[in-house]
Image (cartoon, rainbow, N blue to C red; front, side):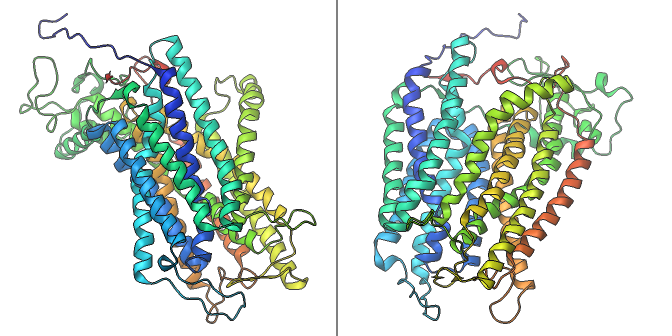
Length: 584
């Protein structure tokens, strides 16, 4: 031990992973049932209860989803810098419950929503008043706060309850992840079937009240387990280190790099860092100037920089490069997510104007429930890919992962193009039958119901689910492995921010198409009545956008360099990482 080092005895946290798991998993289950039961059918709610047009409802949902996802960056920042995951989750859970309670009141209290539209096509629909919209938007605002805190923290908080330095702890973490995704699937199934059915066919107040009550149970279960949780203290934001490297690189932009930068630049590495020591790279060399040592730079006795806003280490610079390198792939993901946005919005409108009856009976599948087929295909495909396809690819490619993460993401993008082409063909078939064959009734404010079976929508949803299994899950792993270890929570936020930007892009694209394709007063590609619209043309447009995006992604992938540590490994397994210093 050096003279300037001081031995510090740290209290070993009392991990109670198995005992804490019922509370964490219970909280997760009720929270997912609550939030998904509220959001999965929201498009129909806005169209039928608040009398919004399909364009207005779709744009509002896209903006709401985008804000929820973009807010995760702020939630992760607050969690890692000031509050810690426990407090962030507690505040966010209460906010979600209050938001859902307010939303339930908009359905239960007649004064908080406009009167119901008539059945006749010529009937007049009353738009919501400004104060009714204000009450609705306040519910969305509280839900945004809840989602911003819950999404980036819930998975990591569950993993905090296990000791990653023991075999039992690592097994517990794996078990928790398995149970987490099981509850996610379970909640999706219940939300898209039972809760959506109650909302659409029984009563909206009861249908929204059920998930609100479940969210209340989620809060109760979470706080009941407070005494046995391991609570990780925040250690400061890694964004500060990134900002320092960028600022110093700009200040020293006129300096010349040494001929052998790997040996002449400031190469300090903190012994307390949880990050792996990264190898020097020549990519983005202008950032290396932040590590040039000048006569004005002072160094502490322990080897660190006296003023990190004037001198940064190679390690800091390489950590910035890790984040900068993934941005082009992240941008490609934003455009890819536009396909998933259509599967969650306009597919619902397609289902509304399709034959949703099962056989010759009277039971109708709720329009929003068709999204369950996308989830089912993803759930079925994952074990097939993991247990059958990857071992075969390993024998062929001689790679441990079978194919690289970027190859996996690219396959999903190809399937996204196929999804939109199939969607366009199915919509053309649905519209043709509605125009040339007898219809099955009339949807208020929309149009006639096509005789096409809603089952025709299943193929496009199934392909979209498999595409998501490749690209989205591939991006989750890609961001997790390519970000520095102390930015893993931000890696999750990075993904959600991509979702957010995609929601905004989709909303912008819909608005542009709505205005530029307008013919007469009401008809355009995205008219209220899909039988008078050309939704298939819009799907072809999205398919063309995805083809361009695929070409851009292939170029980015060609020049991408994976993160490499000084010992030569490209990726670091989670169980090998040193955790933050927790307290009980």
